[in-house]
Image (cartoon, rainbow, N blue to C red; front, side, top):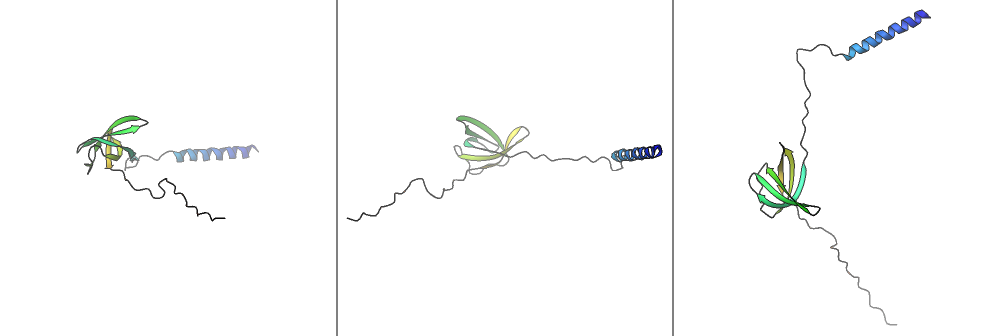
Length: 131
């Protein structure tokens, strides 16, 4: 019985040593250490408002949030086309180097809403027949 316990204990120690040896990395190879790099994309955000000031490199808009007017200034990646002061615009922007950078400036789409306009038409009742 003692021989069996000693053999089982010896085998368990040998297996544990092999498992710990497998976890350790083999020596450094001649290729060097390759680090995993991750590219972090800046999130895209949206803002809507009226243009207060515009130039080839920057645009300022005034937007309303819960009754308060906020002025936002954006650096432009590309000059905005057909945008003038007092136009309503939608801006897609991200934060680059601590500055708000607009990647797209466009006038919001003004499509007609199809369907009822909210007025109800009264149905004509047929003239009642004389009794």
